[in-house]
Image (cartoon, rainbow, N blue to C red; front, top):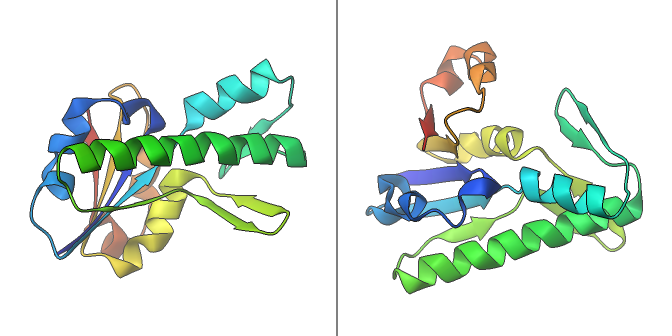
Amino acid sequence: MNFLTKSSGDLIKDERLYKLPSIAGASDRSVLVVGGGTQITETLKKNGIKFKFGPFGREIKSYRGRYLAWMVLREQKALAQKKLRERGIIAEVDIPVKKEGKIIYHFNADWYAIALSVNFDRVFIVTLKERDKSFINDLPKTLRKKIEIVYL
């Protein structure tokens, strides 16, 4: 089976993440998409960069803000890759950003994982217990069947 696991950036350092069957278990292909919402918010605030939350996540108008957010996600990716290597886990790590030259496109990591779900047998959205992921109930039934919310 092919698994896609989207993890909240707040869980990248959490050992429980790397013990989940969708990451540590045997599969034909395992991809970990790492978010970084809390870390991005902290970085933007620290640098005085304005943003707002829209229906599909954080909206950052300035190039500098999008660049800083991309750098945060690259750090998250590198940390996740290191954690996987230390455990001998073979999985690809991805971030919800597309960069073409000086153009940076950010995607909400949950919606990014949902968009990628057509390529996977199962999708796990891993997050903190207090986070609301009820938007999953608004998805078509065919998608809801393959997506599972995992609260750590």
